[in-house]
Amino acid sequence: MRPSGPPRHRGTTPGARPARIAAPLSERDIDDLQALLDAVPAPLEPLDVVSLDGYLCGVLVQPQRVPAARWLAHVSDGDGRPLPPGYDAAPLHALVRRRHAELEAAIARRRWFDPWVFESVDGAAEDDAIRHAVLPWVAGIAAAFELFPGVMRLPPEETLEPLALLYRHLDADDLEDADELLAEIDTLEPAVDLADAVEGLVRATLLLADAAAAASVNRP
Image 1 (cartoon, one colour):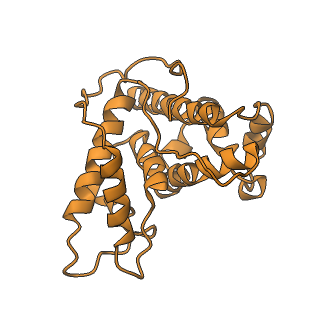
Image 2 (cartoon, rainbow, N blue to C red):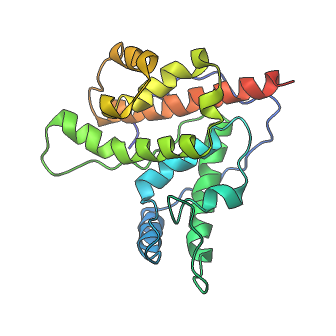
């Protein structure tokens, strides 16, 4: 879902190659993608479509490009275990690559994109409903940062704000040895509604892309 007004950003990545604009996946495509993820054979543990979306953003904001073979391995299993012989991953990978290309085009141009965050209809309280809706997406991007830690090695003054926007949706107990990050989170106003929370996800992603681009330009 998209709140009114895109977040502000600094512009496109200097020297980055233009990303082609990809056709957005339709609701049917997203349903097909979830069905393909659900059909990944056990004992592999694939991402769901919401955590996959966050994961792809985490891959795309790295200061150095992650080879497709590396990040695709963690789509069908969080630990990157190989797919069994005879399993045809082509349909799954085709849809995942389409979403990757769509996000890449938006992030390269620092333009709004619609995160795959779906509103809860279980009647939970507003704060709980917001957290329940965005938590899988945040878990996905956090998983990418653990697997590919380039973002976490960027200058803290560039990443503190966007990481706080993302990790404010996690339990404080999950953020061990992160006193500075927790202090920054304490300065943030809680999201007033799901649209506000989603805008924070997009803003954080684009700010991290800015930080990664600056690091790439300044690298010796």
